[in-house]
Image (cartoon, rainbow, N blue to C red):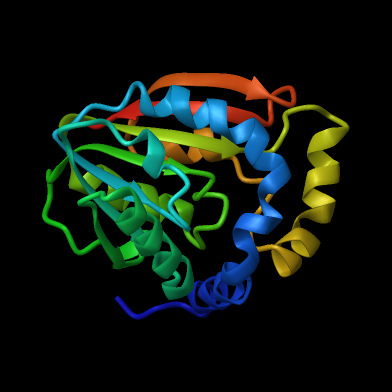
Length: 208
């Protein structure tokens, strides 16, 4: 499938900030670490795909005795993930790849994990449909995401500022990721608010 201009722009944005991404995330990561640990404690193998591995922040929480494939759209981010994997002596398989067009056969993975990724995927439903395709029947998708607030005040404010945030940072702040998961024919199992009211959520869904 030909790559869209929006996908190219997304890669360029993250390539631009890849050198200082971890520095930019120091403060929010203090919140994210316990959420990452909790999410990964639920993930089952033996074959796991991490979408949007970024600089490898989830690697310390990978389960033991599993095979992990980890992908990212941006070469600069993936280079940092590879370095982290080498330092941790992990045998993860890392490669540049777009979740909207996965190069894996149907029913290949027991679990797919993505943390704060689908806020940046240009076509999130297409990406989630691809995740559904590569999951085994009964396999599960595990997400941490920030989503558009249902609050009548905060939701419209997020809509207003979304174009500016995308231009400066990359992610959308007004995605309706729970609904997108359901529109991808995944069966929603868990939708749990975990921070900042209803904005940060842990989402788990199962493939049929």
